[in-house]
Amino acid sequence: MQTRALQLPLPLPRFDHECQGPLRTHRTRAPTRARVDGLPRLKVVAAPRASLGSVQHVRDALQGAGYLADEGLAPALFLALPLKRPLLLEGEAGVGKTELAKVLATVRGSELIRLQCYEGIDASQAVYDWDYSRQLLHLRAAEASGEAAGKATEKLENELYDERFLIRRALLRAIEPRNGVAPVLLIDEIDRADDEFEAYLLEVLSDFQITVPEVGTFRATEIPMVVLTSNRTRDVHDALKRRCLYHWVEHPGFEREVDIVRLRVPQVHERLARQVAGAVERLRSLHLYKPPGVAETIDWATALGTLGVTQLDEAVVRSTLGTVLKYREDHERVTEHGYAELIKHAFERGALHG
Image 1 (cartoon, rainbow, N blue to C red):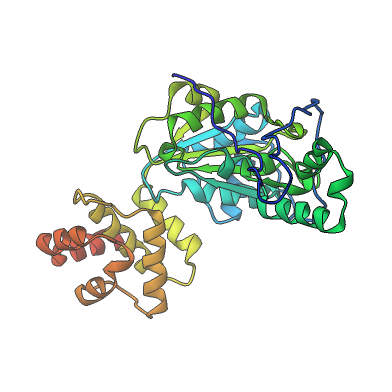
Image 2: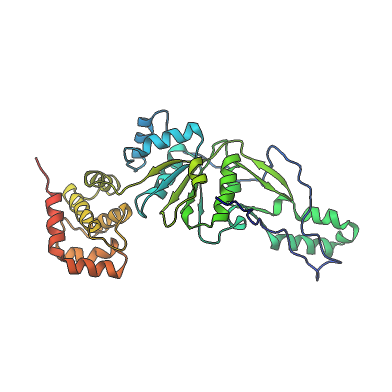
């Protein structure tokens, strides 16, 4: 993979109209420090931490928080913790990748820090930036009080690049744990980011340190639990994959999806939960533009329960299909295929035995 330096946020632009002469664009005070203290923070009361001392403990803790892990996910998650390796989850949208990170933060009693990736993301959105408006106010206040006239330009500039003006983005916040509990860092949809950002991210995940040229080097005293997700709109580079533990998240099988619905929507009768899971199973076999994920299954079951529905029929499916399918082309395909066959499959799979 070709590695290029990521463009970091530029320091405060020149204020030619506000001061005598231009300010330098950055300064060179950068002694490496073990950790840089941040701004005063509110005390965060963490939830009780669940024991994650075995694969079964991990599986039980996730289930207790409403997440049913598949066979390979709990071992991968268990190994990621002691090995301090990021966990890369790939799979289609809606299979529960993002939800896992949220649940993991809950069971660990730690903060969830989410970095949503998109095309063009850079360090100013992901790592840090400077609060230009506050810097400018500080500069104007110094000029109004006459302090600026009595200070050397370099000293005034040093004040502008004080930590109080530093805006900590997700990656920088993640290496500064609160209350001694390492956070869960969710890097969501890494496949949407550019190659340059992915290369920079690899460097951060290797050393868990970030250098701000105007301030110093921030190093993690507690390694965060990192979860990366990808919908595989493009391949993640091999160098990043080698750094991570990997797990492919599939759509759940029928019985597991029924269990998920019963766990997340307990007010729904088992018969209806099975019919919904059966109908979704059939929808996924129709080669739709966007097959429904687990999130849509849960939404459909919740909607039906809210409407007081006890079993599926054609009228119910027609009126509520928008909770499952979000593209007009998919609705047309289901209509062409016929609702009767969909209902038949749902009833066959939803039949209770014994």
